[in-house]
Image: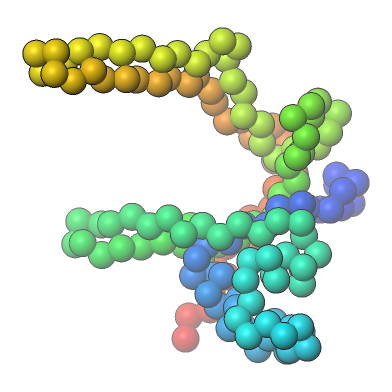
Length: 145
């Protein structure tokens, strides 16, 4: 990662199931046993891995059988994203959010015979992966027992 971009990743993300296993991992707990932390948090893992930010994907979806599943599954990843609003094309980045200039609109309209006024907000933007080498995906992080 650092040899391709010249910087270390500044963001690590993981699915909720990976986070749960990571906080129970014997090696992780052994490295943290002198920190007065009983159950590691995302901030504790960030300090342990020396990455400024760790995000945990808690989103779930429900299938046709009413069974909930993690959206992020048993995956995790590392990436570099600029934290500055003034980022430019010379700073490596995994992804940019491109927004249309003056692309935010608010309008309203009456409904139900004028009893309700519906407010609608529109924001025109798109995410683009522009530096694929600035991100790294790790799949199947949890070994089947």
